[in-house]
Amino acid sequence: MKPKTLDHVALWVADRDRIADFAIGNLGMHVIDETDRFTLVGSDARRGKLTLFEAERPRERGALEHVALRVNRLDRALDALPADIEIERRNGAVYFDLFEGLRLGLVETETMVDYDLDHVALRSTDPDATSEDYRRLGFSTAEPAPTGAPRVEVGGAFLEFHEGDPSDGGEPLLNHVAVLVDSADDHIEEAKEIGVEIADVVDAENTYAVFLWGPERVKIEYVEHKPTFALQ
Image (cartoon, rainbow, N blue to C red; front, side):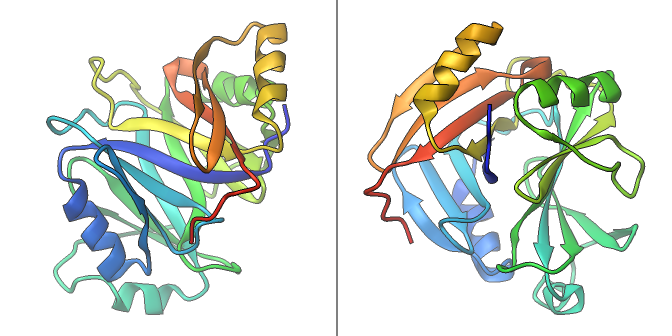
């Protein structure tokens, strides 16, 4: 398996407009695509994005600890946040709670596109073992996070694993984590060869993807952009 970049993080949310409006007004994002099922927001359609799927009610945080975005200048990014938002400073980054259990972070590091995905932090009952399992799914070895949490890398972005309870009562906030690949079909065949459970295969207008069940039932999308990919 050969994922190229961390493409997007998809969430189940009850009020996607509220979260999308915050991202547009305070995180340098815009609406890239919108249907009756989801809203896709990001600062660049070919970089890290957030997909907000419609849910009937707020979900459990479950496996999702936080989603962190990278910026060239943290001071400027902080100035763009509402004055009344409570932030936590930790290891040179800042974190804050948004709505419906969603926790976001801002990390200052050199980046081609502000508000690209820096890392996704996942809760795990055994972080070290979980990081090893992700290597089997094509993610690369990485140095631990500044907190010491085990990490894996894809295209310069990270998944990191924090000790905690990933259970969600069957109603997770996290829908899936998506990585960009050259060929979804190749990953379908390899998943069958190594015995990874396939959750779904989706042939959409701009993308073709296979969804796999990863460690601790986190769904991972291996998504191929079609030659006709035209999102901005």
